[in-house]
Length: 546
Ligand code: PEP
Ligand code: MG
Image 1 (cartoon, rainbow, N blue to C red):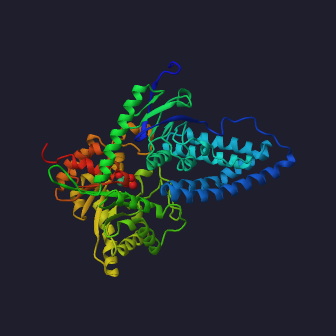
Image 2: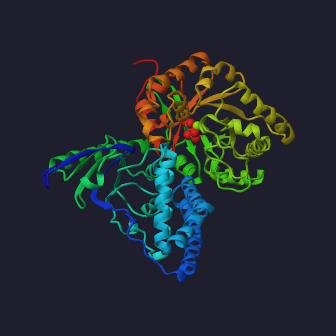
Image 3: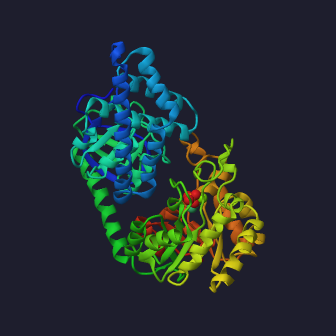
């Protein structure tokens, strides 16, 4: 153990980069261990059941409000989380088990909530997959909400945390994130939480540095001490000495200066030292993303993810609805090139209005273009919407999860008649290269497309046989590893004249930019905040000469 008051360093995995310092604030879990259930007499059963119904209905409403707030203030994808909480809360099996607990054991509604949710949460947490574990977090989140409603607590514990603190928590639940959005948190340290978790998505979106996977965090880190969090290097110095503070401040200043420089230059083109112009475009999902991207100097949109327009709906959007949604999201990029990716959902992200078959291996099942080809009307609606946009934007179509050249041919068979019907030119078409099969058949695929875009997130998942959402195989998921760069080079060698871009996370990591360019990549599509530093990285490298 460290001596009381002496500095010490702990290590974790970075799930959101950056530097932050502040006073530690330890956030204990509210629900805590189960305490003695509160017994009720027979004649109070009806009353407890009514309280349960009342609380459930109230929370269902709260969740809708919350989803709207998150959508506006934070991120569209995160708002979905609360939609799914509402579904989970109203799950007939869960509701039945809650009622049965009150009736059989003669306990209060709050005691029933604690007992039943703990059972459900445990069921999820003992499962191997990260997906199931995240569901365990969701269960706990809902149970806290329901429990609080029953006992009349209306304040969220994070509503009280001090500005600028370093938050220490066992894990971060989705609804915690909403309360954090109002506060200027310096950094977050977590015992659990993978880089694919909701918490990780959120902290990255907010630009809050975060380290996770710190064993015994809650026991080791004292409250109310100064912490210097270096989420770039993966360490935290607690109770630092003056000398350590000075070094840290120097690091913060150097980084801030580099960022200021990058922002100043962001609007200018990105040209390598040996004079090659590289296109830097943006990955977007909301209007906020597109606005931010344009401010930061994006030349267009390299990947518009349209999933948000579909998820959580009971009926698919019509062409007009889709056009309205796309026009809103892409408005800030009017007149520029925008690359619309066709809907990329599948068995792991089911759509309520499509027949759902449980697949034992959803990532290898009917997702992306495979699903769309099964539902041609769904695909036609998207193609029509894209064609309607072609008057105001220079639109391109990107096809997700391609494995065979036939995937593209099938899309074109639907697209060409629509172009004639609507009297518009045929837009440029690109294939996402995110399966090894697509990379290895680029020659055959290239015959049917105008450009290729590497989705390195999925390409890594399929090449390394490592689920991108599963923290326990994170070691195998390395998107900057030799096998990935080899596939990129191979494609460049096979189709040297084909425009190549990368739109996976790898494109946004400045340290790998030079290598990507030597693999023939000439367009990088990255999240809006990364555009300035990616452009700077391009300006500092040369492709053909050292
Ligand atoms: C990818 O797989 O790299 C990609 C860009 O698509 P998504 O992350 O949406 O699957
Ligand atoms: Mg992908």
